[in-house]
Length: 152
Image (cartoon, one colour):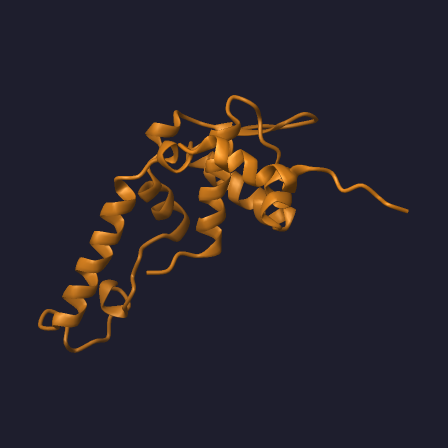
């Protein structure tokens, strides 16, 4: 199984909001910590806001925070929003399937089982779970948040 970097950074944005709570997190902070482009983070935050995972505050001094309690945000739900259907092989999607082995293929059944097992694990995981080691996470990102000093 492989998730896109978009999903990874969506989860990282939620994790950062959880460890910084109740403070607002700025898009620029996420971009700096994870070395991402600002527009990419804006897109992620916008989608997470539309889904109710984040609350966004516009304007000077704005940013984002969790839209609900961290223990109420299920990682599997975030993955479904950011990834869409996990059609690992074409026969998972009846609209695009051209495989003549549909219904008799052990491989597709096993891949479906594996996908379900993967999502079952993510459905048992919350943003609170991935943020539980708050002190360690904050210590790791602290040097990344420091403004660079011009030595010239």
